[in-house]
Length: 367
Image (cartoon, rainbow, N blue to C red; front, top):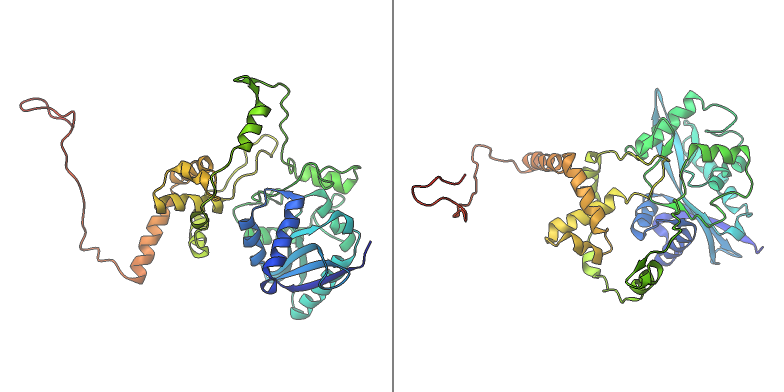
């Protein structure tokens, strides 16, 4: 294996070329990765550790993002080093580069905040990433051979409430919102051999892989089976996406006002799996695009925002939950605070037209 060099740099200093490489590496290991989700998560972090071949300008073979969070516990505050997306090509995973760099990062944070306890927080998307804890730390939680202490549980809950308030389940310690999943056919999917740590992870995370549906029979459609039909559909030339319209996204400020109003999604799948849920923000982008342009819902299929059926279903769900009414009321109140509304003067608009099926003279009138 060639010499591996690891460096840590600020996310804000990364070039566009480096970010494109990070994105491609992430797509190699996971399903459900989108550029928008990647950029949103990446730009939120503070630092990124980069693995390169041979020298500091060599080929990138792995990376991991980091940020420091302040977590409030009863009577004190602790610092949490949150590890975001992490990807290392399989042939370079025996390198100790990321481990050494993480130790340096820990020491730097401890020097910055000597009065605080420092925790490392990792969201494990697969059994292999969970077992990283075995190599880096003598003690960690949750673990199969010892119950999680009340203090460690408080740290986990404080992180979940701060970072993922609508998607963290305190009872299970699992975050369920991410559409990203380990690829079923990769070496990270199902372990070749089981140990106590792996069994513990699988038991705590049922259905973490995307289910694969197997069809035994082929049904004929117009003289062609389903595989032939799908192949022909793929060969059709697709209408190119409109770069102007697909570039529309709601602002971070608008999303910060809307997100707390959204209902918490409950996974009703009997095994806790099912198809990955499209992120709420992607649906919000699509919904506000329809509201802004006045286009039909099906027109969303020609954009890169969201499938029209998903966006419409989420729209109906939010309408029933009163999201948009509450959002409108909050906007009215905010405008009243900023500019003021003269509630003494109100205007009503209406329209009158002849009823096509109304009654004629001296006959019962329509209602």
